[in-house]
Length: 376
Image 1 (tube, rainbow, N blue to C red):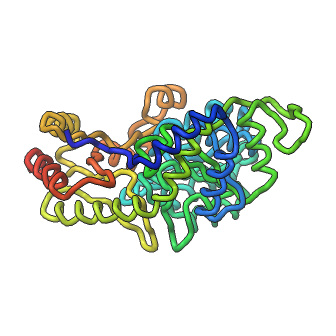
Image 2: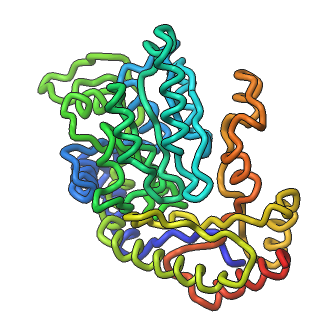
Image 3: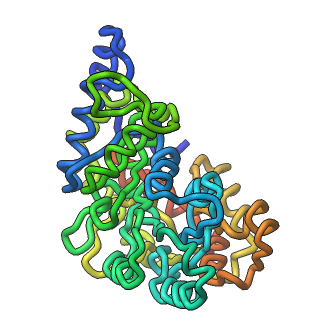
């Protein structure tokens, strides 16, 4: 089976975890602090706060910005469900925005229309608390335009950069554009700690609040332990952080190899009737996933195509989800298929092909042969 992904786990990662397990010091210690510093230095922010996963990172980021019941958070429509779920878990309401059909990221024109509509009415304008773009599949959203719109209305931006550690746009790293950036270290991401997440920020007060929220509300700065707010157990373990440190040391190598593999796919797919990933100007993506779009005439055949590839021992899957059209959100807010046409199109046609650092060209050729057979 050619797997969808294989994490780049090597001997140094295993030795780092073994050392922690043998030490007996397993939670929230010096390795977590070292991992936080490594990520902050790489992204170019003053602070990084490690947590148990990216969902918890998004959750406490919203809470740190005082998102509460009845508030509105503007979010890209195309993402894994955690991006919208955390808004609901704060008691707030996601306001979905359609995407660009080339980059699969939030469309600034649709964002502007949504902001103009909401902000023109005092009742809704006062409830909008944040904008949450997604760096889909490891390519940064159009942050200059999104940030300009956010500044116009004095709204904070939280980057869902789950897939994008190491991605850059115009030389600026993912996680350094908004007031907060949230990353994932799930096994399908560029580097992994098994599970795990981290939040980057330049705001010291937000960093302090995040550190309290992740650890039962414990004051992170007091020499005498005390609890200053209700909090969660969203801590990262020491062995996750130890693995994170070794993974960070090879991040640039992994990204470079993934970019070469993506370019190889692009070449192999030149004569196949598929839309390959679009590269926006000034963008350096990390290709967390290599996602193609099927031709329109095959939109009802996608599941059969994925099933065929799996029978050929090629693991493939969908891109990700049109979140407002999943059962919970469509029923609660009465969304219709026509409400987010570009998201619906991409959601129907997207297929994720196998990609991992040590994939060889022969494996890519097998993948292309398999998908070309069924598409043509």
